[in-house]
Length: 287
Image (cartoon, rainbow, N blue to C red; front, side, top):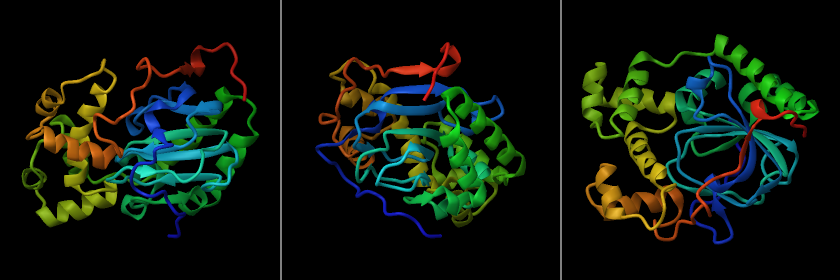
């Protein structure tokens, strides 16, 4: 599968963390889709800032459709999971829509092995064929955000009916990692699902996009992410202990690899809040 060039791994002084993008519009997906996504649908407008982003390491798979094109990246694309932060090359599109798929949700809705996407930015047409092109065209031709989000619901529900189901063993392993905060040993996971260590790693990487060890580290680090919304400064030694790290130095190594910054360097969100307008609550939201 051909892929576009992704940004370099590391930190760019002119870039900002992905989590501070604001303002944005949001809408909840259909109930059947919610377990397959990591958050609500998101729409970013001409007012969204910053334009240059550092994407943290993640198992999630963004599906992005530009409503107004830009020179960087395809008009519609997906990004595979990755175990290090990525600095995007060039500014984001002036206006775009984003669906953040959970890894097993991406496997089911995109219908292909996720290890083919790992660390790559891939044109949506290469992933979904003509259906991907039609979706992007319809979203760009649709006049309101409410209608765009409804169109996404319809499209993803059709994909859900026809998509492959993750192996129960992979789903069980993923659920155990999430439930334990990434603290269960991979060997124990293999024993619990009845597979060899090697077979679990291969099938897990195929359906989640990263190996179980990397997934466990990212799940554990998600506990740290949630602490970043608390007032600064944080006691990083305490955060490390409560998040399952052996020591603060271990946390700092993961923090740098996964975000591109050390904890002390990581930019704060201002008042700690992002401006998110939910379309369901709006009287009228137009493009």
